[in-house]
Length: 145
Image 1: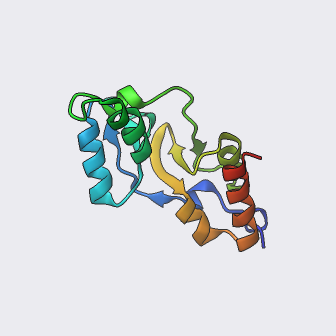
Image 2: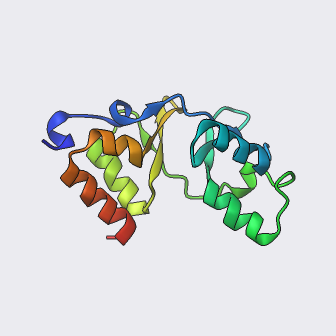
Image 3: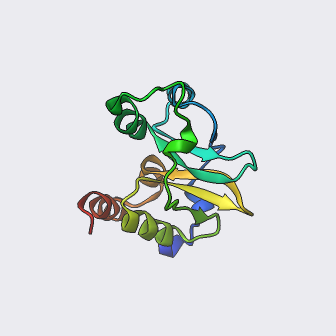
């Protein structure tokens, strides 16, 4: 059975309660939140509570630590680059997979009424997708096809 046959939406497969890092919070704070939450990425939210971007543990290492940046002075918002990709809560799962594969991303924020309501990660997909569909998604993201 494919996700298309089940009619699942992004909201059905996402994990709820994604916690944001503030756009003005330091990268040290972001790293500590990731450690405490056991996640490798955090959505970045502005003072208006709107999604501004996503920061990953890799971003912190490559764009700050490796460049001799200051973890306490560099903010999450400074690493939030353009091209934010997200899906609406009602988006069909197969459409969300296509967006993720097209952009070669492993996590995607889920938005409902202009507010972050959750995230879809590879772990969420592994729980929800049939093995064949998961394997195809992983191939598309990692192979860039």
